[in-house]
Image 1 (cartoon, rainbow, N blue to C red):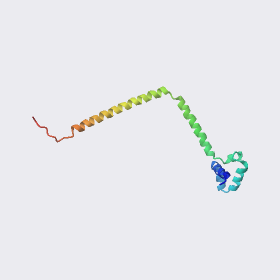
Image 2: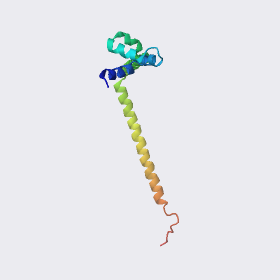
Image 3: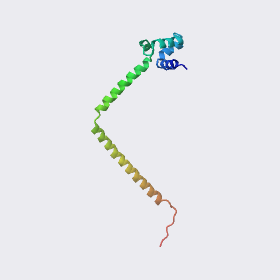
Image 4: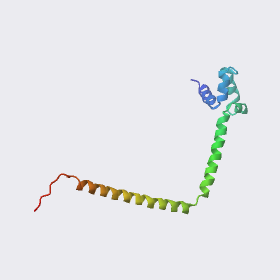
Length: 122
């Protein structure tokens, strides 16, 4: 396959509006290819064929990241560390309680394993 054709295939994927116009019959594929070869990929006339919704999404993502970064910068690291230490202590208490519950359950099970065992009198 001709290298220019390969390049054009990639180019047309980056310009979905152009592809849509080809599919709708507004412009022929051959005509689009010839313009691509004559004008080149960087010609300003191709901008009208780029995906505008993708540009909007990109801008929205940039704004979201800026807001997120602003919030991250405002975080008080000492306060976060205090909260983490508090959570760690609470988790330690829960683990201790679970261990005690397991011990209690094991003791209950072992003492009641033989409920019908007869005790002999001396």
